[in-house]
Image (cartoon, rainbow, N blue to C red; front, side):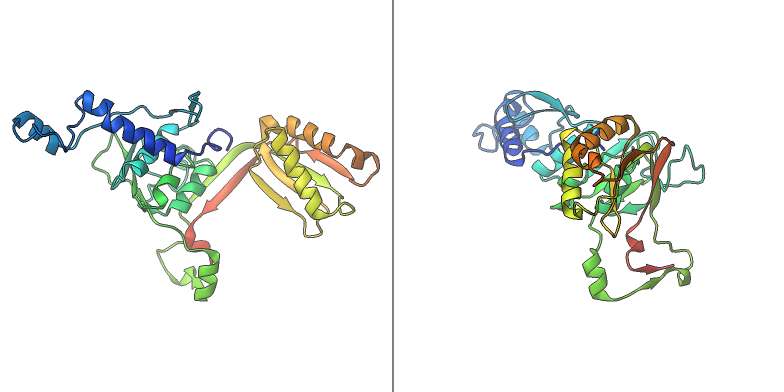
Length: 300
């Protein structure tokens, strides 16, 4: 969503600044002792410090642009900070301490029977987060993917509980199709292909109808361009097979702004009836997402 997306680290610059801090201020502040310190072996305290892994406490959520302008990593950005630090320091794992027993199969406030998921793939965790699972930042998994760094989500109030571990990628659709196997989950008692169900509340549907005269590709390009220019957060997109209509899901509080932007973009086509109508739902709606790698190529 717009409250979490759109922040991309400048990795080379981030690593350069981290290295500069480590070799400069970190040494001056006594966080660690440089390896090439000739006096380290002669001084017991220095030797101990040199062989003890330092504990670095860093502020999450905040950042700066390449020009030095202060900014933030948006909602739950501290999760993102943790995995960014993990990537640049080549960490072996990341543990996120929350107030729940890991990532749940559903929102326990709405579904009392929901339970903690023992393991997830990066892709599954990102999908759950994007579609409303607020225990994680949607982008927090991205820095860990290349090095396959495991991310543990655990409960600070219940540290004995193992929580959820997130690691590995889901098989792509092409890989599943290449394998050619169809899993019949009905025959696998006790095994289900779904990892979690989540939702995004208070959304609206914005629809452009009867635009086949213009052409589907042009309609889609101008439609999405108008949303981008107006700063609208498009959550989902669907287009009719006839290419005569296109519908997007937007946050409810951006609905009227999106409607105005789209009418302005297709003002000439509306006046000539090349576009039949542009409408916005006024009924409260939600997105419900069912997430799970096992559903790919599955038969239920």
